[in-house]
View 1 (spheres, one colour):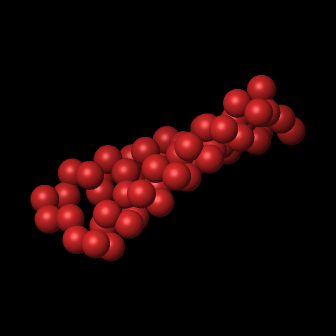
View 2: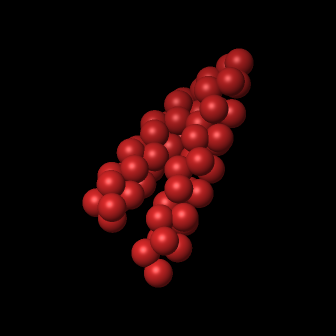
Length: 55
């Protein structure tokens, strides 16, 4: 069970990093895009913290 949770968290981290990279690579960043970048950074941090606590 624990390994499955670790896998899910790792998958979520990689997914949000990919989305973050795509958002950062956009040429024209409007207010909404900047908000999404901030949100994805927060989620990555949250998932990394949860992964550390799990281990």
